[in-house]
Length: 577
Image (cartoon, rainbow, N blue to C red):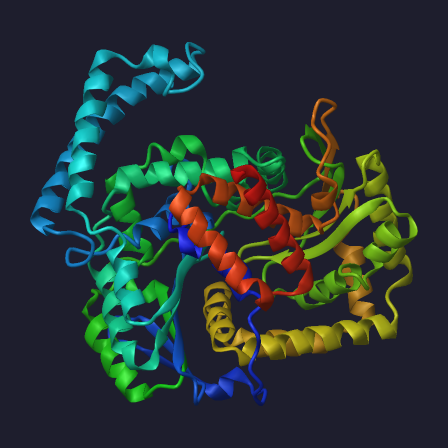
């Protein structure tokens, strides 16, 4: 996410609960028009008559799984860089900007040369980090001083956030982006009479990327990593567990990247990566709303058609996950309540068994699911539980987890979680459970697909993972899942030699958890903590603006999240005195 822009602090959280408009459900294959531009770029269009705004977005089919050691985090870095504008957007004088970028590149090359020796000193145990004070000689200090002067000159020549301002002045809302393992998505809502502006703006930043503030933006990403991972109660431990679980697979490194890689990525590497993965043939545009399709296609060809076709196809992700070959147990002490999570390897998105795994998730999770009834209501050993079928493009996993009450051992949580899994494997699920889950999934799908924004996001999401047409077949397959299939996939995947367990106990020295915070569901707790960290990191004026946004949108979210927002607001006001 583009965390540096204060007003967009909580957008995805709020958008997840937008009210869905009523409409007749139809198959997307019958309502979606797919067209390929002359350069190979795909555009998907869906009509929603009467809508004042158009949900517009595009996906570059590249995420952290496409990276390699040495450049981990580069996909996420592009998410940040794409908001820096173009030669015509974001700068007062492009010639000055281009010269400053050239000088910054030259200085960074000299700094990289010195850092090679620093890295060797770290490997030999002379220092803990390449930034250690004892390694910084006069040559590096002089380069840093010259670098800082150039950065200031570059920022003085910039028009800050001009890309955002152009859209805002035109009445567009919700501009943002996200990166995950498999894709990078950019989205916005634009008034229907400003659709041509969208075509120009988005094609402009794709056609002429400037990578403005490239080196300083890496520092912003590093700070984002610190806030999301290193400054959270379990972030570092979660990262270690994930790398153990996915050993050798590209999903084993974090989307934000390893710290040493983020600081070492060069502009040359970035440009080569961009040319490969942001080529037209690797991008899908999506429009959902009330617009003239023929006019939209003419604009698409006029603006996006300017971008040259890619010179090479992106390479395949060839690494397959190695078998677990055992029952891995990872233990750690954290500044958080006790918790347990058990994870198994499964299948990639839309794989043979994926629909049955999605049903299995719903049987176990939620307040009417088996885990909540057993651990929260009956045993009263947990404050929250969850089950998740995490299927991605290149592989998948299934997990069950529980946040324990104070004093409960994580081993006890794991024991009960596994008992429920084993009971399901032995006895299967009831016809009532199956039908209830299918009804819930069908209703959720219906609500999501009626809202133009959600439909746009779902289209780019499915198209990046498999193909947008999978949306119809995937949910059809879920509707055909039988109780026997759910039991069979549980018996096939959820076995001892295919699992890993993450067991967290509270550090003896840690302060007790705030009881109000502890009462929230674990996922909500994580969101609350992240929101607090982000708000605390903002300058006072941006923090006030973000707080106003939370207050204004409070009524639009479900009650559990209203309580979470109230908690965040109360904590911030207490800290501000």
